[in-house]
Image (cartoon, rainbow, N blue to C red; front, side):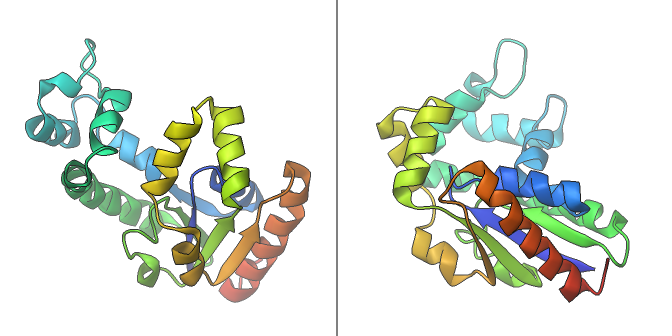
Length: 200
């Protein structure tokens, strides 16, 4: 089994790379998706978040008010750390379960947005970073996700710098261009991952 950490700054295109790798045959362990699952209504994770932040972070239906919680934690590093202290151990436990269910020849790609920020590179056999310039990422966040420039800058500033991410990279996928240029680059990285795993 080859354990790969996949990361990239917001707007870099990591989700598209993850989707392509999954289509080629990688086992994808998506931290964001798991982070949503571990705080769904009725979970111990949601109960812990409510205990920390109060019932005001719930919707009328009893689900987590993500935009409301995001507004709190992205403006206050101490509150973000408190949230991470609840969610990260739950995500790690679920990720380990999914990884252990993969076969011995599998390429397991852990899709981890905050890999560099949380010093997680040593957990993986190698780290793949999806890279795009600050200008490209800002344009995508405003044009494709409907953020204001201020919101996009704030989200980007809350993450590691481009240099910090590249410093932990074993392989880099340049995604500064259009989507059609991305696929052959991801395919080349997949071929390399398979070669390193001794797989397909």
